[in-house]
Structure formats: structure tokens, C-alpha cells
Amino acid sequence: MRTLTWLLSSWLAFAGCALAVDAQEGFDDPVLNERYRALIREIRCPKCQNESIAESDAPVAADLRREVRRLIAEGASDDEIKTFLASRYGEFVLYRPRLTPTTLAIWAAPFVLLGLGGLVFWRIVAARVNQPLDEELPP
Amino acid sequence: MWRYVLPLAIFVGIAALFGVGLTINPNHVPSALLGKPVPTFSLPSVTDPDDLLSTQTLAGRVSLVNVWGTWCVECRHEHAFLVELARAGLPIYGLNVKDDRAAAIEWLSRLGDPYVTSGFDPDGIAAIEWGVTGAPETFLVGSDGTVLYKHISPLTRGVWERDFLPLLEEHCGPADCPFLAAVGGP
Image (cartoon, each protein chain N blue to C red):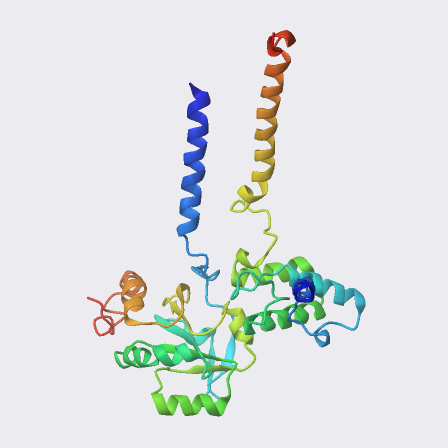
């Protein structure tokens, strides 16, 4: 039983790095290769939506990886590649959406919520500070 | 008073937001091409490599662009309906993706060829320009060459009547679309 548990958990440890990309797919140049690997992790597969194109086995993911390689080889910047893919598959394919009027809410929400939380916290604390100490103590 | 109303209002607001979020179909991603001109592409025809299907081919009339392949089971499912639409006079162009030419020709001769032209795209190059995620997918292209609609999954009569016909009626009259009545329109 113990061995089984150990086996299962050791498999799970590898589950996170199951990538569809084979080692042949990258670039020989380590700098380009690093850029390629980073980019394909940031692009969502339009077919199987909870995987990046690095993880997905869908044919369209393989096509998009090939497209990213072609664009990198042609000297396109990361931004140009993202713009190209977003213009065809929608902003949706970018895991890190760019700051545009439509995505403003996503980017602003954490700060707005943090600010609101801070405000509530400050008000509660301020209210307590003004209370005389002996009132809170049991007689 | 507001210490009771405010939490309730926040709860109702969040519940409404989640309610909407849970009923949205996350698989429905509208095409990035809607309302935009047809992408630039040029492909040799499946049946005749000298014949080209390109952006220019699609200009000037309302048409369907259907993504298909012989490997695609669901394409087989919608094929008969495509043939029916084509017989009624609707121009349909094919985008044959990731396929084998001989298999594609055999498919068309066996099941009927609903396409004016089918572009042969074995590597899916033009498919990326069209933002294609798989097959079958069907685009409705207006006579001004803009993409009016995109449907993912087989084009059935139900889908046609619900999603395509209203757009067709809106974007072309009986004069420029003489096939309108024959495909289910007024």
C-alpha cells in the first residue's frame, strides 16, 4: 500500500511538466530557444482551453508552435508575435491579457479590491482606537 | 442601517455576477475576424492545382467558407447538408486542412462536391490566417468581403436556421442572393 502511494505521488510530481513539445522543436541558439519556450507557455491553445500551446497535443497547438518558431526565426519581437496571434484567435489566446479598455477591469480589480479591503480595515481599527480601553474589559 | 444593507447588496451583486458567469458557455469564443475583412490567403484548389482560391475569389458575393478534412468525422456528418445548400445555389468555398489530396478528391467524388473551389492547405497555413481551431468550422462572408459569422462544429439545419439565415436576410436581399428562398429564407 505504502509503495503504491509513493508510486502514485511520484507520478503526480511529474504531471506538471508533461509538455507536448518534443526537444527537436526548439532552436539551437539558446537565447532564441528560451524565448520560444517562454512564449509558447504564455499562449493559450484555442481548442483545449486550459492548456497552453506548449502543453497541448491538439493539431492547432502544433500549428501555432510552428507559427511562433517561424515568426521568431523571421526576427519578430515577442510583442509582434502576440499581436499576430491575437488578431487571428482573439485576445483570448494570451494568458496575460494586454492592457486595453476591455481588459482594464481584470487588471484594475485586484488593486481596487485591495484598496477597499484596506479601507474597511482602517475604519475598523480607527473605530477601536477611539474606544476607551476599560469599556472592553470585563468588570 | 447600511451595515445590514451593504453586505446584502454585495452578496446579491457577487451572486448575480457568478450566476451570469456560470451560465456563459466558456467554449464559445467569438472569432477575432468578425466584422473584419477576409484574411489574406491563397491556396491551390484540391481538384486542380492550377486553380486558386484566394481572398480575391471571395469578394463580390455572399458565400460560405467551410473548413473540412477527410480525417474529420463531424465533417462527414454535415456534408449532406452542405451539398443541399450548394444545390440551392449558395456558393460554398472549402478550406481543406491537413489532408491528403487523393483522399480529399476521393471524398468529394464519393459524397458529392458542394464547393465552388476547395483550397488545399495540408500544413494549415491559411487556417491560421483564418483563426481556425479545428474542423468543421463555417464562416459566413459578406459580399463586401467581411466575415459576418463563424460557426464551430457541424453546420446542421437547426444551426443554419437559427444563426445563419437571419444574418443572410439582413445582409443580402433577393436581388443579390437569388438563392435566399431556396435555402430557407423568405
